[in-house]
Image (tube, rainbow, N blue to C red; front, side, top):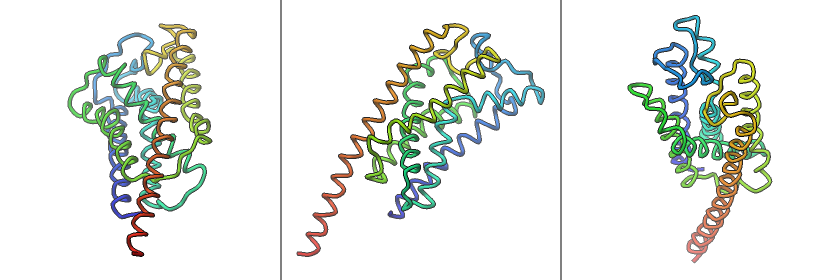
Length: 235
């Protein structure tokens, strides 16, 4: 693995970690005033220290946070030990790509028109929803690692998103509040939420298949390029 690749992985990890840390600091401290759009949306926490536990739990309940954490962990591992290849590392690599792409797409299509942050909140929001998704995809396209992904990893890669969904719905059933409008059971009911979740799941599977397909093409080109370079050296 080249030094440039390890630097790219490290920068990718740093952007995700910094964005997460900034958003956590603002969420936990209540530094950003937030008025939820509906009584069943996250954000109805007491001001000051009394509302800090609720704000932290809200922070940890967003899919955006989970996807950025997965990216940060995976890219940190690649930066520190890029040549270690195990099945669970390969699953997490695909997980990171699926989750962060879905995060970027859902934010751009569904959430961006509803949320207009300012100041440091805008910086953190951009880092989590736009910069990290774009950077993660670009780093993968340029530096790989190649040959890690195949169709057998698609189903295992859905475990973390499904765990997030189950925990979110369970917490929502207790507190009657949800992180996103399209899974707001109070407003939409379980039937509509199930349909919305199914749609997002289909998008996730399509993203996974596209990522695996692109990886195969890039892997073949990489092998072909290495073979041609070796042939040139021997001549």
